[in-house]
Length: 142
Image 1 (cartoon, rainbow, N blue to C red):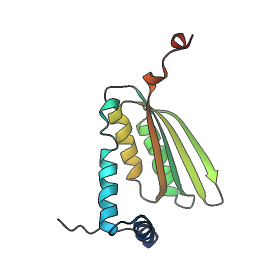
Image 2 (cartoon, rainbow, N blue to C red):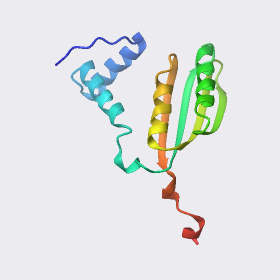
Image 3 (cartoon, helix red, strand yellow):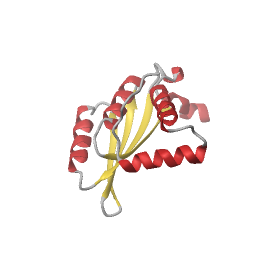
Image 4 (cartoon, rainbow, N blue to C red):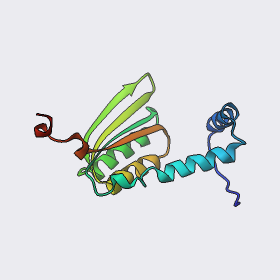
């Protein structure tokens, strides 16, 4: 197996070590491999291909890290055809949350989420994707 060197904050490394111990992993490498497989497989769901999707993306970042907020604004404008709505909120004294509502296809949403994930200094990124056509129409309910 190839050995890879990865840089990460000490606090994240401590969380990984604690997680490994609590959940019976053999070590850091096993956790990183599993997390990598999960990340790479997230948008490989064949049932989402070719469908109109709605995505919700939340991003948490430190208020003092102004470059994150600027990057979120640039991404919102860069993907204005995808971003149906955007909400910014203050969380506590030093944190901000950015929420994006997206409407598009799998490739567009995965590209957007990838750019969010590539943004330095974000604290947490979460998202969900739902096919819009699963909701049916009003006529289907009556």
